Length: 534
Image (cartoon, rainbow, N blue to C red):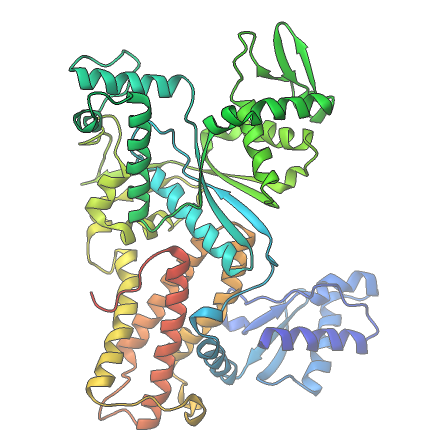
């Protein structure tokens, strides 16, 4: 890759100047094209230790590199306080095209930073008392796409759904379902909504409302998430930990480690020993565990299953709970950094400029299934992934449903459909794409063509950044940029026609193929289909 060649040139220049190179030499694309194609701050980083002024050191580095420039380098310049900027010949982008189509969808923009590490990604994890609400779609899209990004970077990602299937809420749900079956009012604190009426009608008269209702919820939740292409490797039951004795075993291990004590009839975790402002109750005076103990037991179980990193996707309302769960892991002897809790903000649904508050089916909230019925799984999923999960999101149903260029989902998928249309026209006209080695890519000089290739060159860095930062929305941003650049190419650069020389047609056909590979990778990471017609 060109970036590797530039880093080596910078390192060699430092050796010539008898300056120790940093372990990692920074190299990035300037925000403004007029500043060149690549830029390094290496002179700024090393100047102080070398006893040099950064800009003068940058000038010496640039002079050495220009004596024997790496392939594709057209010029080296000094900018600002001491940045070394590289200007490249267009040939570097032609090499990008070769890299993309040579590696293909399977291998391009793939990394091995994960080195096979086992990562448990837990997300959605709604209480099994009813359908998934619309906001749960954001966690579903995010969690699954994060797992896809982790996998492309060499991790072994395991998707997990935690079922809080014991306690008061399950009792209220069962009582509400039984009341609906009997045609009676639901309990004061019970569950409302037409879905209970529907399910009560389905439930056999002799069925246990708790067990039957529990299974019916799981069926509904799994089917809804399946529509979005989200499938879980494990559906983990809290109740199973009670039955297996895992909660009691966890409490005993904490006692053995000397971090638990008894006071006022309750059992306490000594969290103040780990920086908390007060100790936390694990078991109340009535003998019932608080939610802290089962959660610690659950995460203990994850580590026992061999996971090296745990990632939980929670709502922002759980912010205050993160620290004590990390302390729980630390109390069990784990590095708290082995648990990451990612907090997401809520989604506001809007239709006709007005907030949508109530569900036709659930009565008290809008279900994810209703959203999918209105806009479709692809549109819902990509929309949920437009922004960073830690920002509040407005989901405009009318916009997402529209087939207009203002709709980012339509905009991206239409780019892939246009690629497929070019391939169909080529087949209809019997235009065969020659072997890449027989095609003159130097004919690709139009700025629209080069912009597409610039986007493709960025995909490996985008995927890695999305992985490290736990930010699948960066892939969404990239996909939208590539789609925009391809639409510009499609408008300004005919691939076939009497006015297009055969050699240029061949080069552009390969450019189209490279764009197809890039879009296919990006859309797959987002869990969105790549349609061939729209």
